[in-house]
Length: 171
Image (cartoon, rainbow, N blue to C red):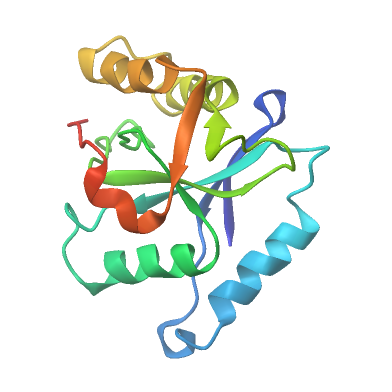
């Protein structure tokens, strides 16, 4: 389990990845890791929402992306109904398109009528991109991405199987 970014001022945690060795997959280890993380780290006094970035199977063909969607769906994650791409994680890397942003956990009361509040998520994304890309980006793609997260006060949280309905934007 990798904690990628925790910005307590926004009460948002981004999980970089959950991984198990290939020979241990499909034996419940990933679900146990996720449950352990929920019990130990995800507390309403620390976080309002816990997010993860996963590959969109439409852009990342192969079995792994589909299996990841199924895994998180089985473990009650929700898909944020907004487009997403990952920021540059270093000066030598490009942004990564074809990603989905999912909610792994949310504090009691944070989810209302199947939606999560956009403000802490958008604020977190602004900070995440600024830190990752050495200053807040000023390009049109970033502006388009952020406009999607800031358009309404609430972001629908959908079953992960609904990913084909999410618009994809280029990074």
